[in-house]
Image (tube, rainbow, N blue to C red; front, side):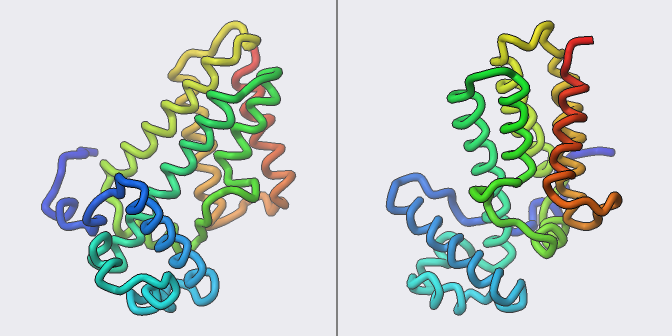
Length: 211
């Protein structure tokens, strides 16, 4: 399937700008926090730009400086979720990781599968909406960036000998990410989260472990 840009992709909603300076980052984070609170209370139907202004305490004009409409706001929030996920993996596994590779893998899987209390909020309704506003190239770039940080993590595990090929690591994160996202829509084995996570971790261990 071609990933060439189309007029439809160019017309997809996007935030007006990325926050760069500290004050702008604080403002956008506060907007996202208000967005999540509204979404949790009332779902997507409760989210309006006026409600967001009231919840966040910012003037509606300030919000429009960053997000021209609700779709652009959601697009920005999805990007924020992915940026946060990669940053947590890099900080807690790539840079600060220590101990046996199986322990580091367990933490890597836990963060990736949003199975701890620090994960950014993302629910089934957001998943459905994301499918309507994200172009194929956006999904590809996001996955490639996630796969890169997984490869960096695994490459740092000195006690994993021999090291798996990067292609194997990329296929593994593809399987984990697919399972995690599809679980928002269906749970074919009807497991609780702890058991599901343990199964995912075991699959990863068996894939990476030396023969």
